[in-house]
Length: 245
Length: 245
DNA sequence: CTCGGTATCCCGAAAAATGGGGAGGGGATC
DNA sequence: GATCCCCTCCCCATTTTTCGGGATACCGAG
Image (cartoon, rainbow over the protein chains, first blue to last red):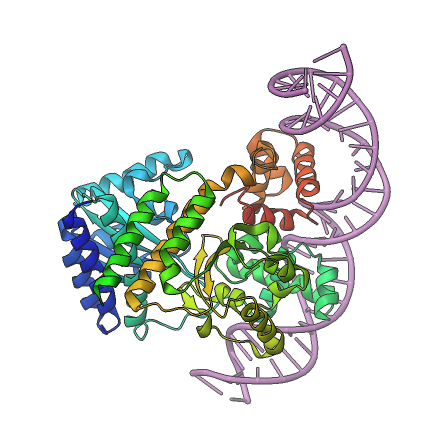
């Protein structure tokens, strides 16, 4: 721990205090990047994590990324194989790109994503995953050619990431479309009980409807989110935060 | 912002650095409490948030609570109505107990919980909710007679809570599951595929075993964790972190 | 007013899961 | 050597879900 590290923490907390007064996401973006550039970061994004089948583009809140990277990324469908993204689904701890696990099944494709990122000037990176209670998984992502972060600075960046996400959410709230859920109330009711192991008959009794109706709701939920059976639907609904335990 | 606040941040980060070397949860507990006592906190717990039907007791990782409070809390079933707990399900931001929303349907019961907490010496409190990828949750909870936290200190406590959670998870890992996991490797394999919507036949093909065997694994997994069907088993296995998506 | 979405209900055949049971081999542990 | 657990496989009756179809009614937006 050095004085420089402490100075960084100090500045980070000052910046966090300042987030409350910012109304323009560009302010957030530039202030954060200015602070972390000494660690070697030149790129900075805050984005939600969509379903594997979706594109990343529409979910980006803030982005300073290499020119053309995002559109290329979406066009070739990197999102599904990006080991950094997949790591975000599994952990709540901040991590450097060097620490991610490469799933054997998609190893080659995952390496390609990272190789191309390197070619675009993002040889190294650091992510702060965000897991929200009601519906979002998001990630604050920093990248550059070479990064250097003492442990204490890393913690400061962690904190900065958490609050930057809050600030980004707030400042881009108007611009974003209202997030509607896919499933209907009844479908979520039925899935919630199914998640607890109730059969259609039992759910029908609980909700005071016929078991046929319960089956119809399960069927419609399956069709809506494109799942293969009730188990799959429940898991996916949990993952999308359509239902909660 | 005062020098005292900065000193607090400094100490908090020192403590966080020290978590890595701690192997006894009691160390974590006492060091954290020693640091935050100047804010007025005298009680400190880290606990998972179980399903509403469960008890809190078995999910507590660390606990310095008033004598008899936890057993009383479980005995009278406060968990289901505790407005602080319910607030944790909804938010990702740290919050003081004064900021929680009282749901009208359970208002009286919720007030009773808080009144009894006050009688036990916990008139005020502060929580750091923890959310992981599946939406399963934990909370770091601090309480006392009267608390005082300037904004900057509050951020420090936030950070402290996040890392204390990590430390508590790590240091209590052995105590919680000395033998490892409940399910066998094969049972987890089968459940992992079931979570993705595969039928027994499909899983059998994937794993190169007969579908009878797959059904047996599903059956044994059901019996082991005491669930009602495959959907329930998968959800519970995810919650217990026996499997991951 | 029509159209789309939601919620409710129904049918029937086919597929899948469940709940009993049993059984052999292998590996670790005591 | 006995015991326990894991993995594997099997049978069979029953229950449950799935997957095609339907249908009626309400409600809000265009």
